[in-house]
Image (tube, rainbow, N blue to C red; front, side):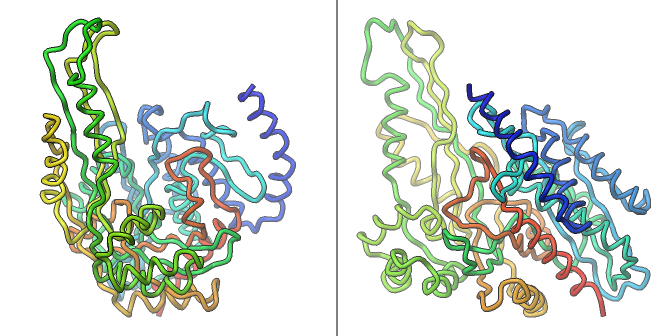
Length: 465
């Protein structure tokens, strides 16, 4: 029945979609078409994962628009996971290049949980649905569409423009790491603009409140929690089985609140955003600045996931496995715990805390992969002023506020290579309604088109005399 419901929904929205497309400008129609093409290519793990079809499709569009073969480069992370770098050459470069970033891989979508097909772009009630519509195929589609538009217009930049589309941001980040270290010549730039960071925060009714520029991000680190036991027959259960001990440890993890610890960026964010927040949140945000050690405030903060993630390190169990037979006590039980660590903290400090809550149950904790720090990017007026000027054209009176991203992006590898990165997705959304990585991921049509035009104007401003 749910499958039939999705088919009916697609049929009901087809006429509306055709009408909307008919009203699009040529550039909007191109960007919608590119987004539809990318969403239709499954770049999640269930798709192979094979990024070659998506990269080939984007490379073909650029070739057809007149980009030379030498300016379109494919770099392999593996034989199937590939990355694309495209260069819009200046005939009179007077400045170092400008790098623009997006990723085209996505997390898995469970079709049975969605009300529409996840790997098909569907318009409904002013929204575009599909896996990757916000994270981050909209960003990739905008960059490619704008490159094509600039080429068709004969735009002559005063610097090279570079688009970098990576294929493994949601997993290992190998693509960005390879490009930043082993292929630095392809992406070397004065600074980078990232479509996978920042946003235009809106209220629940869609009123713009703040233009967010991501200048820092939390560190991504995962740990393996493991409990082992000799096991035995399930007819003789014990309270200290591997699964039981791991479960109690995960409950302790759920109850753990890391200390509130504001840095320069998060303090500026809360100060500037507090007057704009919904009334119920304003006392909380003021309290974070005035008395962050208040236990009552700490307890209240966890009810606001976005603000909570900006103010402290967070850890959550994301994967579970255990047991080897239905009728046997488990000999092993494992959980993957993903942490987002504040940049002023360390993975070692976080691991020490996790070991302390795991030790009473005899659960071991080990880091799954090395951690890559992400140093904050400076608030350079030469970069922030143009970002602010163009933002005022779309969202007059809306303040531009620096933010520390709660999630990690490819920007951390580029920042570590000495290229400052600024997340300016310019996509307007309400933080409480974000569906990235979740069911029925979507982006407002209006938000997509506004961000598309914002990036077009910003790039022209940054690349002309």
